[in-house]
Image (cartoon, rainbow, N blue to C red; front, side, top):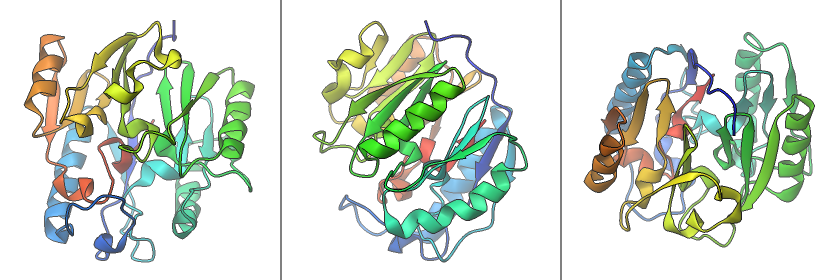
Length: 262
């Protein structure tokens, strides 16, 4: 129902800056350790390479402490690229470097314009269909602009309002598409009409953070420390790569946040 899954070949990444701990966060899990974050990011990059991706690595950006979460700055499809307008004003300066980088690989580039705001973490690609989250960072105007842009390139989309789901910052904090019509969801999203017709993989209570996982070609990146979810995935035949994400979790970040994959 969603078309053929695309083969991913590249990923844009950016290591955390020295002032990473000064970034935005809505959770109270303590201050991240910079050196540990660097080590975890390096492990993440190695995992991307093991999935067959060539990395485009940008230098750390001390002017933007959240800039390691590159996913929020662009939507990269097989047909076009969309440069976002992040919902947090302090993050809007991140898109300039991303636009320059993306323009090396994409001929067709679009931009989210005011008054729209859009974070890439609110956009879940499911084949030729996109789920667009409306959240505290992505407003209705930004979501509609993205939907209109995607329509031009023959993609369908629908909105998922997550503003009343207080346990997640972005849509993809509680949702992941794994291909083959399978969707990982937290309990608060499982009953949504938008996901009717999909095969749902529900994350166990207490392991909700693990819902932010990333299917890359034949491998599945998952956050380590969530044994019930990992066991569930392995029983379904997935080849998983667990990665320690503790320092990024402290800053509202997950596995998908750390790269732009295309």
